[in-house]
Length: 296
Image (tube, rainbow, N blue to C red; front, side, top):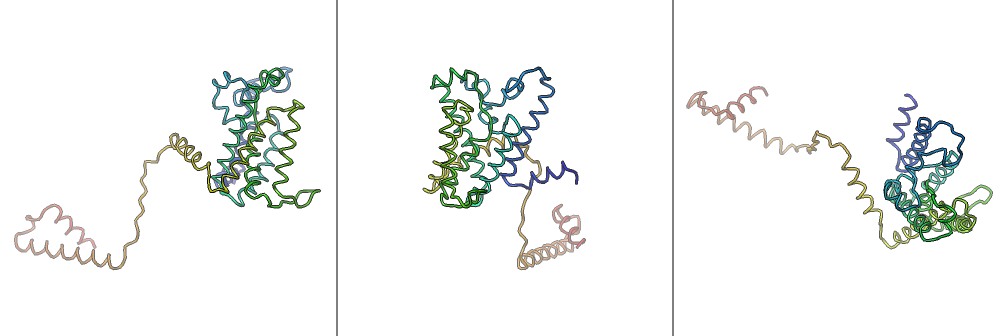
């Protein structure tokens, strides 16, 4: 089996977590390959050297966002460089595995998307209501799976706060303390004005995750409605099969014997009719029944 076939098999047979990891990695590779054709080296650095990112990342300007609404979803699968990608994928894998120990894959998918959207909302509100952010970053863009990952971490930390994981150099640590440390790091990082949009999105994702974990403890799962909505969207574009699959239960011995007796009664009746009126007096259905019986 070729490497491509192995990847396809792994993707098809993998969990939701596996699929999310593959999609993020595939998007990163595709954007990098397309970049070769869209922009040759021009001496520019940073985001300016990757114009394709502007089409899949969320702009802070609301008018520009109105022209690119798909970025509310696409941004959570886009990463600027390999380091950005690898750290987000490691965190997604670690926290996603813990999440799936207690909750189901559809809940993970719902939290990933809703957490990412919540992070985008906080980012947009902050950049359009806080003058200092707009003055420093008039044309900021947001990308990455970090808000979604934070939502996954905080949802499971709220749902199972005392679940213990083992960290290198630290030993056993409860999930609630890992989540708290991550939240504090984002809070104290905002005033530095370095990756401010990312830290704001993290807080938005964390807030949704914390609320979601609390809702679950109360017996409410907001991801159910979201997943149903996504199923409808996918169903619109999914090619419907022309083949109809029917499932028939096996008949019992009693039913088989009853059908056999009825068929024999019909054949006997037709033979009596032939004896009395001749073969030509039979209807098409009677002739077919007699023919079928002769083959058995």
